[in-house]
Length: 302
Ligand SMILES: O=C(O)CCC(=O)C(=O)O
Image 1 (tube, protein in one colour):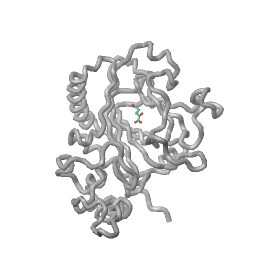
Image 2 (cartoon, helix red, strand yellow; image 1 turned 180 degrees about the vertical axis):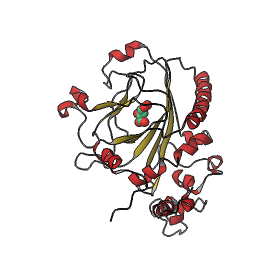
Image 3 (spheres, rainbow, N blue to C red; image 1 turned 180 degrees about the horizontal axis):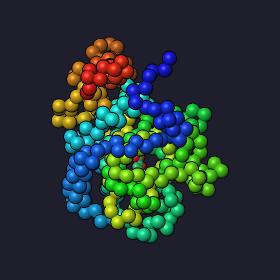
Image 4 (cartoon, helix red, strand yellow; image 1 turned 30 degrees about the horizontal axis):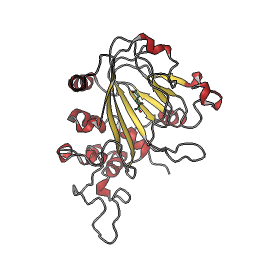
């Protein structure tokens, strides 16, 4: 019998399966948004000055969980983590975490066809160099992301992510031919209010709409994948980042439950990666999910 879901509704499950995404409104509260925006503005301002970025240039920072504790808190947000575990299972870790600030752009940006090769943000699916393995031409479920939107994206062309519905399963291109561009009937511009989260498969074909809103778009993305894949933003986090983390946060940051660094086990003659064969202590999300399923929420609290 399939495991009972922690939080995922049948409708969300169907949308994730068929469309490749669903939305969670009010995933972040107004105080959480304000706290995150204060840190983002500080970091964005500092790096913009240091890098001499122009007022219309977008700026992205990666591995943000290492940059500030508020970003680490979002990685295992109690309202969202159950959904991640329902969708990917407990044997997971963080693949990437990034903050994106996209200032308002000049109107000419919108003259190019959305997501075209000439546009500022062409259609793509996330993948490592040389691609994912394909099964019958389709990317298996390798990873998912949660996007948290912190500014108002309810208007057309306000810098929202756009996805092609169902493109994790079938070609995004009209008539199956890339030269025709993405099928307009399946393009979804994710026009959402601040605090909304997008839970999505990164195999979905996606791009970003021009931002002509007059205000910067600010958002965060957290990517999750199985422990046996390597993260993209880090090999191992600095000890300072790991300090004070809960066991679940350590799991998500790719560490071992012992706190030791014996990633390949202790047997010299037969090393075996603990990402390949985790012990229960390496993946506390397993016991956490079990406790939640059995209604022992107090024990499950990370
Ligand atoms: O900036 C965005 O909204 C799109 C981000 C993106 O392309 C990604 O997370 O892979």
